[in-house]
Length: 87
Image (tube, rainbow, N blue to C red; front, side, top):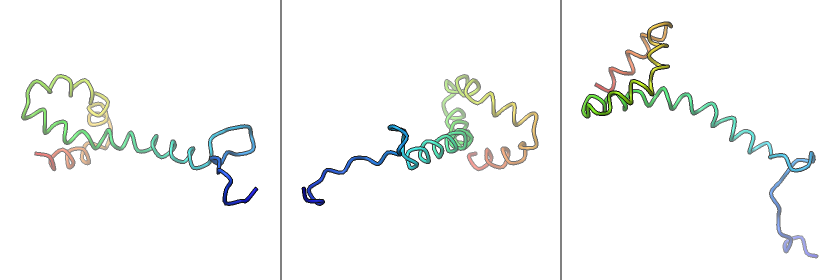
């Protein structure tokens, strides 16, 4: 059979069908990006909550962990700076 006519299968490692290194890297990257996106979503969420008061209560619940970080860690200055960008 001609090599060009062969159908290429997705690459898998030799351990019996485990995901490839690229898939693992993609999943690891997503796991690292999700917390960053959560923190970055605080600014737009507060901006919306100021304009639409009905969103205030859900925002308070969703961002309770960031409120704790704000109150109990040295991240207060960085969070203040970022929040002020959205005012």
